[in-house]
Length: 475
Image 1 (cartoon, rainbow, N blue to C red):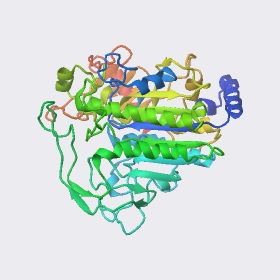
Image 2: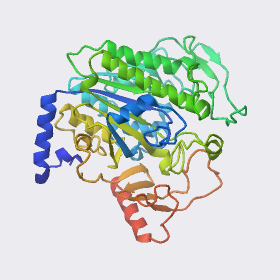
Image 3: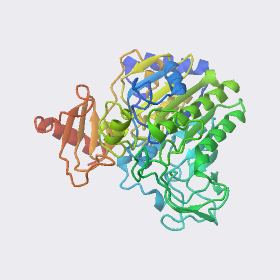
Image 4: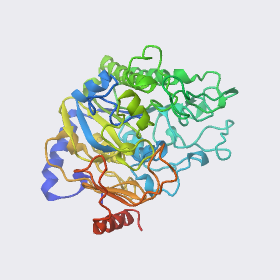
C-alpha cells in the first residue's frame, strides 16, 4: 500500500484528493527544478539562521516566495546514500553496501524520480554531480573505450552534463550523456589549504586529491560551468512539454573555490564565500526561468545533501554556526548531519512566506513528483519509502497526517518527536574515533540540539524504536 495521502484510500481524505487532482489538472503540469547543494549547513542560510555570517539574497528571496521546511532530512549524512534515497525513493539503509566505485548503484529499470516524470511526458535533464556509479572496467577504473553505462541517461534522464563524483575525487573529467567530453589524459597534483590565515585542516579549503584530469577540466571553473549548462537547458527548452531539471551542484563541498567576485565577501572565510557563489547560481537559474517565461509555472526546490565540514574551532573563529542549533556535522547521525535546509516555491500553488514543521525526507520527493505530474499509480515494491508531501505544499496551514518513521541509517530512526541512535559510531567528521558512543534517545520537540540522552531512563521506548527499525528493514 502506497504511503501517500492521496493514494491511501481513506474515505475521510477522498474529497481532498479529488480537489487536488482537479486543481493540478486545471493548472497543467508544472516545470520542476530541483537544485541540490553539496555539504551546505542548516544554519548557513538567513532563512534558517538570522545570525548567519553569509549573505544569501537569492535563497532569501526563494524562501520569501515559498515554503521553508524546518524538519526536512536528506537520505544520509554523506553524499552517496543521500543521493540514492533522493533518486529512488528508498531509504539507503535498505542496501547492504553503496559502493559507487564498483558499478551503478541504481539497477537497470529501477524506478527513479526522473523516470516518473519522463513517463509523464517531461523532458528530463540533469546537470552536475552524479555519484551513483557507472559500469566500470574494474573497481574504480573507467572503461573509456565504451559508453559510460548506468548513469543518469540510463536512470530516466534524457540528457546529462556533469561529472561522476565529487570535485575532490579523481579522475576529473566532464561527461555528456554517456561519453567523456575529453579523456583525463593529464595529471593534477593534490591541493590543500592547511594552516594559513584561516587555519583550515586537510579536508577543508581548496582540497582535492591528485589524479588524472582532462585538459578542459579546471576545478575553479566547474561550479560556473554547471550554472551555465543549467541555464542552457532552460533556454533551449521547448514549451510544448514540461521540463524537469535536476541541478546537482558540487559546491560548497571541497574544494572551496569561490570566484573573484565572492572572495572575502562573507563573514565565514572561503567556505562562506563559496556558499555565496552557490546562492548566485540559484539567482541565475531563477532569472533564466523568468526570461524563458517559465517562472510562474515552475515548482523550484532547493536543498542540500548533508551537513557541512565545519568544526567547533571554525564556529569559534568566525562566529558562524553552519549547522545553526543542531549538533553534529557531515557524516553524523546527529541532526547536523542530515537535517537540511529545504525550500519550495511554486507561484499560485504554494503560498508564499510560509514555514512548516511537517517532517519530510529525500525519499519523499519521488512520490511528490508523481502526484505533481498526475501519475496515479507507482508499481508495487518500488519507492516503498516515498510519502507524498504535495498536500503540505498546497496547504501548509492545515493539519496533516504525520510522516511514518524515517531511517537515517540502519541503526538510526526518527519516529514522530523521537529519535534513536543505536550505534557506537557514525557521529561525524572530526569526532574522536576512540570514543565509543552508547545508545542515544532524544525527544527532538523538546531537545533539538540533542543534549539530553533519555535512553537509560526510557528503555521501553528504545526497544519500541528498535522493533520499528527491524520491521521497516524486514528484520
